[in-house]
Length: 279
Image 1 (cartoon, rainbow, N blue to C red):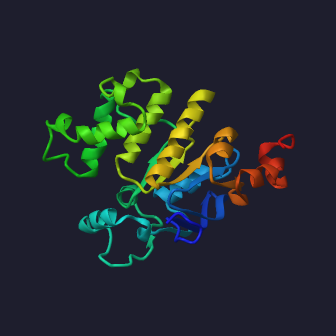
Image 2 (cartoon, helix red, strand yellow):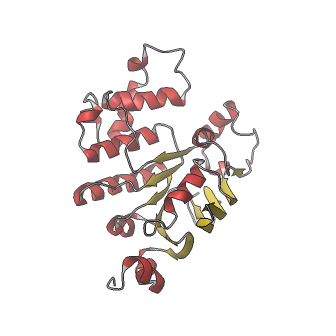
Image 3 (cartoon, rainbow, N blue to C red):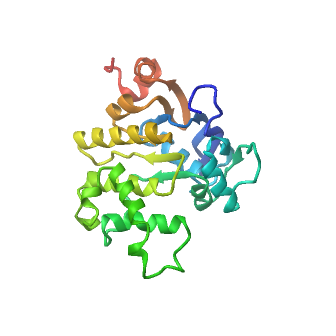
């Protein structure tokens, strides 16, 4: 499903959004496939976060389409969504138009998101953070109140193992280093079982070694679990070392797309973003 001829997991076309007459996003179009890591880059104000917000349902676009392809899901995931009433029962599910849908409904279809500022529960332990997501994902809040600490521990521990935090499972989140908080946020995002993960500047505020460590982890998760990743990032080492495909935004429009070598050599990208001194 991840080869160039398979249907894309996500297809964005003609996406537009303006604020007070100022065009933040103008006609943006791209695809993301299963197991593919796509970087969306550009200077501050280029339209990256607005694009994310329109895809994720945080704000409605003024025009364009965001299409999510259920056919890219596994059989097990399709059955779960059918039971929850989110996916029509059919042998060949058609792509779903998720343009303007609520973040909650989009998340239920298998699209997760992490933010520039970590969103964790500081008063809880590391494992409790992941358990809370698993409980919410299964809609068990009301029936199991008071027993939350006993639920899904094995599943939560497995997720913490995936991100390298199993040894810190019982630590209070407030005591974690910033890099570990980012790893915890990733585990929480994975707890929802996404097939597409949107990551808004995942390495923001991290040191060089922490950035590389986190991106290695993201790359491993994407490839091992066949998850599509769309991320924004200012650190070009993270982009060039780990993205399969790079999209460059400038004033709300795409000015280049391609692999790392193509983007590094692109004259307009070097002029408006990377700087002329970059090779």
